[in-house]
Amino acid sequence: MKPFFQAIAVASMVISHSVMARNLPDIIRSSSLRVGTTGDYAPLTRCDSLGHCEGFAIDMAKSLGNYLSQITGKTISVEFVKTNWPDLHSDLANDRFDVAMGGITRTDDRSQHFLVSDNVIPSGKVLLMQQSKADAYLGMNDHQLTKHLNISNLHLVINPGGTNQRFVRKHLPDMRVTLTADNREPFLMLQQHQADAMITDRTEALYQVKQIPSLMIVNDAMFSWTVSHKIFMTQKSSLLLMSEVNRWLKQTDIQSIQKKWF
Image 1 (cartoon, one colour):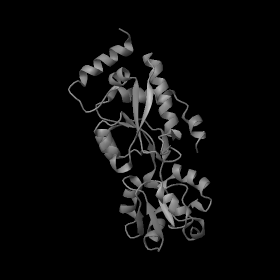
Image 2 (spheres, rainbow, N blue to C red; image 1 turned 90 degrees about the vertical axis):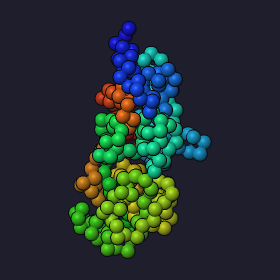
Image 3 (cartoon, rainbow, N blue to C red; image 1 turned 45 degrees about the vertical axis):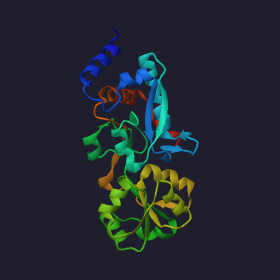
Image 4 (tube, one colour; image 1 turned 135 degrees about the horizontal axis):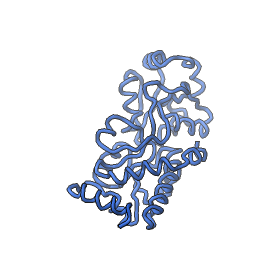
């Protein structure tokens, strides 16, 4: 038996008591890797109404599929499964997909309940704001910025269910806030000047500034306590799959894929 398939056999015996998640042996047998993605987090993941997806994480998922095909000697196709931020954790826990990819930030909670990959790209929260109102907030340190935002009359918009919402609840509880239905609506509101600002990841902010020239990033260095990394995520029992994900990450030219998108 080849070493790779010996490893699969051992891993299958170790996790045979768990039926919560497919692991790599199941993926190989099905010839399909199911990738969960919200499809609303450009430039990392964006899916249209017809199910066509594109973005940095989408290209990374296809690269992972190619890698798994190479090491197994069997064609592994990539199937994108639509999820949303409020349901991301429960969908993964309920085995709707094998790996979650696209705009997912490393957090203690996620590391406790799931397997998280090695770091993919750095991230951190920034204040994305209408340029016409930004001058009064430029050059402030983190404490000054959150203090002045809390006593301002600015209208903040946030997307539901993720780290952006948790940031606002904890650090900007006194601001006037609109919670949208999904991750697309905040940028429509900003574009139409129906809101003044948004807390979001720097990666997404860089992309949106290119799409909406009236916006700017106020604190490009990011809120210091939020600096983290984007990761990929599987269920706890998917040990062999995550091992291969991390091996693939070490071999992949991430920057060349990143340059295409942001």
